[in-house]
Length: 241
Image (cartoon, rainbow, N blue to C red; front, side, top):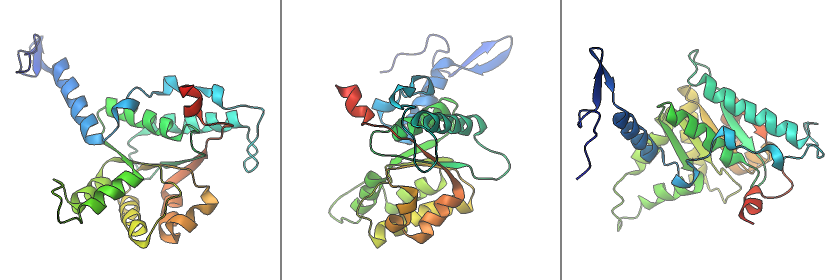
């Protein structure tokens, strides 16, 4: 049996000067529920903007396309992520999603998790979906021999309608017509209903259409502002040494 909160005696409210206010335990429970529903992995819950380290982005190397050095590109991307959180949700019906590109281990997922954690702490529902895993969950519903406890429609509706969707690792996988159609359905819905999306991908923007198709790529460009993170080596490999 869970221990009763000493402040509110399990009521979820505390009273001060004749006013009822949510107890700290109620706020903590709400946050835990938001995290559970968000699918943000426990291992990345401590990723914050304050812990983003610019030392991995040398200013001695230059992005040949944008003419910024790696450090400048990282600062632009970081500031865009910070502004996204600051302005979320936008009130004027515009869509200001983000797409972070860069090679494996360049900090894309770290920055996307910073966004997720910051907004969850503020009480905003977020869904963090690793694209290959999400597609596998949908495929699993087709197996008549498995009792999944969820339907394809539930997975799709969650991705379509959540106030903020983070699509992580929209990478260079073996996309079929089936996977392209599922991704198109999600992204097209979010575009039509002005719901922001944050995407991380190791595909260069100029090659995105070859993997996802023209329809999906066009909508991503319409709803997301692109930023690139560049590094010399895989940051995760360096941190693991």
